[in-house]
Image (cartoon, rainbow, N blue to C red; front, side, top):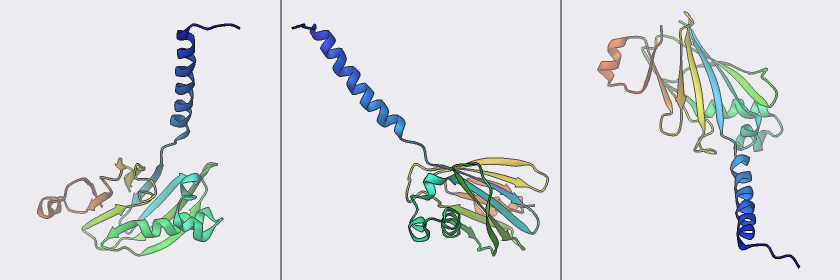
Length: 176
């Protein structure tokens, strides 16, 4: 019978523990989604993409199985909240790369000086979810904002004096 020194035995135990822990760490993937917002004088076009695996976690998916696009559209209709309320003119699926799902929402924008958009998508099922929103105007100037559990809204404003008058803080962008 071969006897191994205790240091070898200890090394094997440590190696086994590290291997099992590292597999669990790398098995977890971040919950992330992306949107592009094109703001014109008369409308806002929002294109939203997310990995398909995130959509399968939604309550809407359980109701609309197996339609990923319809599940995402319904979820976003409930979880993206513009104030004041905007008319949703169109909601349609968009082609995305394999493994992702996308949808486009077009909102009518009329006579609004201040618009707050609250994005609550995926936070109820993944509190650590991160959303990257890119806001573009007609001149194609753009800014990217990180939306997370602590920072869920974007403020769009047409008049800079409104910022001071309303005490608006956070992500502020000009409407037009």
